[in-house]
Amino acid sequence: MAIHLKIMVALRCLGHHSASNRDVYLLTLDALDTPFTLPDIQGHQFTCFCALNAEALPADKLGKFCSHLLQLGCAYLCTWGPDCERVHDIMDEEIVGNNPPQSYLGCVMTTWHAKDSLSDALSFFLDWTQPDESYAPNGCNVALIISRAGNDWNTTIEKKVAAEIV
Image 1: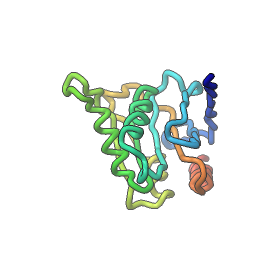
Image 2: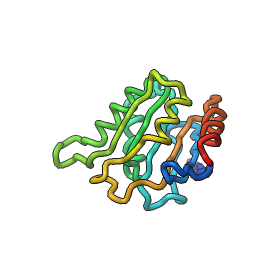
Image 3: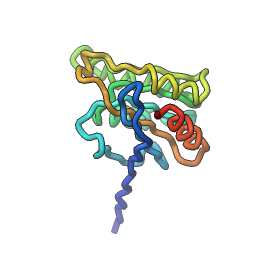
Image 4: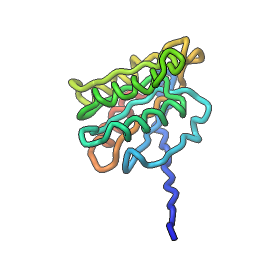
């Protein structure tokens, strides 16, 4: 008999970033395939910053992760960390789909920040991400930061966000 455990991952609100007028949330995942929903921001499109070491992650797993973000409402994705260019490219492939132009989702913005420090990439994310108006006509009042557990990035993320929230 197989036992299935349902893992719930909680969002943590870090505060409100007044310059972008967005509530900033942190989601820490043990693994990229950890199932998660975003009930606190259900129905809202969001900007997303993904701090991730993708070097050992298979493309299909990254594709499922990116597809899930799109289904949840991601309108702008910033990637940072080792092999973040590949995460960015896979997200672009998910946006375009298998049968363009019919499968094209719309102008979801994506950037990668391989040469930036985590702090600089977060500054860009918090201060400069503006989703395409045709894709997110009401803008985004939520900023989601996703980080993998087991690294010291969350400390840097929390300090940087705390310094930006006034």
